[in-house]
Length: 262
Image 1: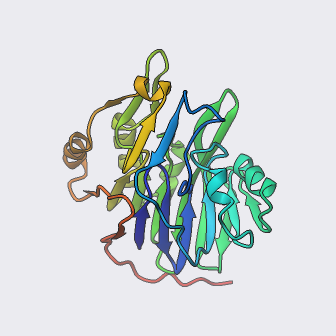
Image 2: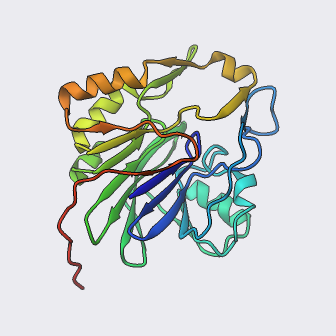
């Protein structure tokens, strides 16, 4: 398995022979509506859109997960898999193959990579977006991703999960509290899933932030502190800190092949 982090929530996942572009924000600015005075994020260095994308995977319909300017740069023949809200964004842009996954539903690529949707981030009073479990059906290698720290207890049945991508520190706002949940919530997730490797997401990377909202956001805890706490309960789990736009080979213990029968 190889992973490339493109800052914020954006990843290229290479597993089971697939190249999965996850929650891509690669070009242009990131804003919520046309309000740069409120929040604006800009990559300090240009990021090239990866080639040979097998499919795009979108966890949410919000701009920091389904970034319209980036999606417009992609070939519309590339399949898109996403939450129902994210699927609407892709459909509005003219993508030819769009699969909306409700919670518990699955998508299978080339009969070798399964994507299962789990309840993820609460982004509105009655709107819960998607978390994902990706499984290599030949090796049984598993990867879990959720960008806000909202993890469903139903995940316990999927353990062990080899690789986890999730927030590891808290981000908080005055009066709101933690809108990104790492820390204790992440430690609980590690106990559920018993991963070999964990990587942080929703971290800054090589990004310049502007706007009123950014001045209010405060981090609670550090990656080093989380690693120390994790070592006390899961001493063999590795915490990897990715660098922006650098491909990482994930060190995993091999598993026996899983034979698929029909």
